[in-house]
Length: 583
Ligand code: ARG
Image (tube, rainbow, N blue to C red; front, side, top):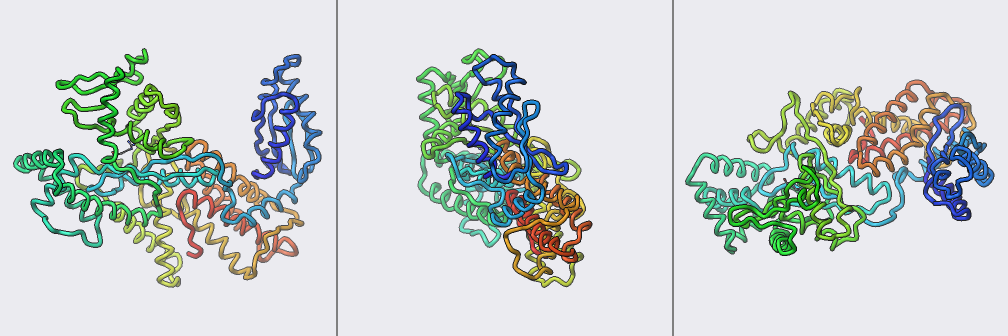
């Protein structure tokens, strides 16, 4: 359904409610599935139940309200009939007019079809969050794809989005890397493949640290110098952190990701320690030092049982922890931006930590604490259910994965269409490859484990990005053969086939699917929608004549093909997936 129709109806109903002293926002429309005609329906029970006047039982009241509203909306243009039945207000569209309306609206909006104008306050989405001096590897894939897609979807739904990235730039891993570099690789520089180089040195330092007690001692001494504020180490840290950031940037570019605000852990370490002192003073935190850490016993404070447990906010030796930095980070975000919501894309194992942190911020008296939301997601398994980990040294770097995907996609595309120009073929392969990697990351519900394997990711006949991309290419080939500019006003005078009706119905759902996906932070809804749309389009493609159709049906169907192509492309683009035009 269309935002303009919905807005118009909502305004009318709001006015009605205001004039009667009824609460607004209780009436919601949903689509009536096609059965000879299209329509939308609103149940009036919630409004009836909210009416302070209780002289009628709710169902009777709902019916009475439906009848009054029926007269009020009767004059709105575009509806063929309106009815009030059993507490519902049903509005029906004249089928051909509706088809025209859907197709024209899609063609006019083009890339903007399904998206809403910006409204309301900003939302911050924190995602990716890698640690410097370590690589971005396959274990980071779902986070960055999911986070990026959630941002696209929120933006499409009309939110202003700030894409934030919280980088782990301090800690033992950084010290190990630098100590190893200074001792064994002094003066070396990264080449073109920064990420690989940083990763290899990280693995080397990690191995050495595990195997060599002398090196361990050396690292500890190095840490001591760092803590004491050694200027030379600090300079090396800035330089090497810069290399890491460059390496990340290369991968983000490959993936089509960008960030508006970068936070570093080093920005919030000192302020975190100061905040902990304040928490001890206010009595919220218990200082167990020097034997024990500083903690907040949340269950004790709140009288809950094994719900929030104990948050450890500073080590017994006074050094900072994950949680030490979380508190100032949250404060910084809300001081800097006027946020409606602050979303954290972090894996599901951090759920207790995030729950504790929101609670601590609430107890500290921050009114925005309730606007923090942990968007939890599950891990990705490689075939054979191997968890991808960064510790065992067998990590697949993200750029390697993308390269492999491109190679595989190239083979498939070459087989499909050997006559493609090599440059075009390369471009197509890159889009197919990224689609193949991204789609499985968003197609599963966030909190279900993804199993990634090449065969299904690149399966042109299964639920995959290439299958959807191929539908775009088919649509495009019809438009190319039509070989004339496509007007943006559609006229549907012909008798529509069921496959056409289904296609129109499916196309019209995109705006609602985007709104729902945004409200629930679920790209999977769009992933499923785009696949279903591609299926419905393929049925249309194989069963409904377009260029060979007679009379006015020919142009109408060409327009419908273009509308389908737009809906497919826009759906994919909210998932961060581009559509090739040929294959
Ligand atoms: N950099 C951390 C890690 O790699 C993740 C940070 C998540 N974000 C946060 N605000 N806690 O484990």
